[in-house]
Image (cartoon, rainbow, N blue to C red; front, side, top):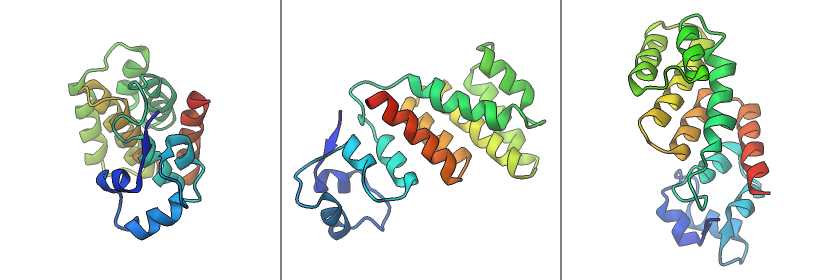
Length: 166
């Protein structure tokens, strides 16, 4: 499992709120923090998920992210949305997980200027597109997290990460 020094975390380019001083305080005298240590920090869940989505945060690219995170977001947000429903059914069944189908669906959902559900569905399609284009599980998880900005969804995704690390 990946671990970071303060300098290594700064090299990951966190948001501007995480200055050297803030990170040094979070590290609290420890030379390195593992991903599990980061998940235990008193920081927003969104930021914890950001750390979990860093390249090489896991020893191997965790393909379970596709099932635990991306498929959940597709089921919860793309399947109920009229604009993305047919694509979501095909993606979930495995019939069509192509980059083109996901990209086309994401564009259609964004173009619909529909309510928040369609925006979330578009983000779900973006997450699936990340998988299809081979961006890796970490990028897919990041895109899936953006599907819903609610703290509850970030918490659910962090619970998936923690469950796999335990």
